[in-house]
Image (cartoon, rainbow, N blue to C red; front, side, top):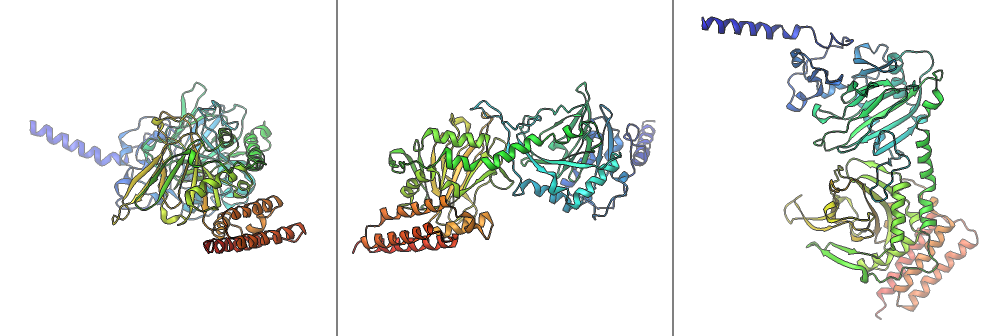
Length: 611
């Protein structure tokens, strides 16, 4: 009898397993389901592909439990997340993953495989587009203030792209059609703006409360490869604060919902070391109630960005930190010297404290907090603020840092070619700057802008050198801890990495870095390549720039001990000044040529000073 019971149980289990794939789906009983295009047979997938989100049932739709039949769904290869061509969709029904009702007659529609790989790559490129201005809206613990442009969601980073350029693309035409099919109504669907999100684990986000009168539509597009344990869902709430629906990220997925719904972006998991990127489009129809108010919801943010763009750096360098009549460039550098680290390769790091006026460092810091527009770079420092080197040359900061560089190099004049501020937070994953990508004879100078920094906050800048004969194997040879106003000077080619702060510090670390070249021509060439304009030299020529350049040339005289050499240099300067005063057209090429001639004469004069 025991044998018969076992045999009967085995036969029943075999029948159950055989029939399971043909059983009705639990999803079909609870939500509107659509037939999807037949998936091709992709064969065996590796372990990572097997872990994709489509294997785990209805977690996307509020987290309801599913039947065992969901376990037999096939894995979804990455390529199947995309359409194969860009043909115009006339029917989106096969691409609807699911829908869900939302409060106030709202609705959620989730579409998969409506974009090509090229579409998604182009959307992702918007994040690092050179004209994308990112605002850091995070809370600053020292100032105890929030950014004036802080979004309702509490997201630390936000960028808004105007609709004008985007609406001229084929991609917008495609999105406009898909949204119109998903939410049919009279009137043309217009694009208000494109909002970009970059989220990291640890971001303390709050719900966007929405507005019951907001008839706009929001389309969120996910552009990252994603696994189910990476979190990152968009949660949509009922009025009672219960979850009405949720959307799990999947590359190429587009979730469209009514803007009246309360929503919350869940940050990614701690083991997701990159950042989550979401492209959000706000759309509306002119005949809808409250269209003007809701359509221009981000207008205040956009205007704030424009104010920062046109009234930021110029005011900082030419007014707030303008040149003093009595130059402060004669400070004793050695008096502020703290330590110098020297690696076996000969690379050095010199550390100074208290050299710059505390008031000036505070002004720099406040600019980074309230006026800065950053660029996003996934590979290196994550967030950087490129600044105008031409405006920097007109500030007293340029004047006061020259002796520091001269003290470090033993040469009177090094020439700045780039200036930027990096912003680093706890969850940022910075990488080491490799020497082979940097100028061989350059010098870099970093200024730390955070007050009240303690040892347990980490955030040190670590310097490395390669072990001889060990290839890519490197060892740390020095570490500089942040301190308000501290200066670190080092060879640009010194491998280094700025470490993120500890969990005890919830703000952002700011470091301003100036890069210098040994020769003026090299500095001009690098700067021109960074700006990326053939007419760069000509654009840089202004009366104030000319004055600063002529003044800088006089610095050479202090190093020339040979009287004949001094006379030659003064003669060149007088001839150049005469051309400027007479109104001759002076191009950047003329300036560069004059500077190179003077550099050569300085070198010649010093070479013969012992005779």
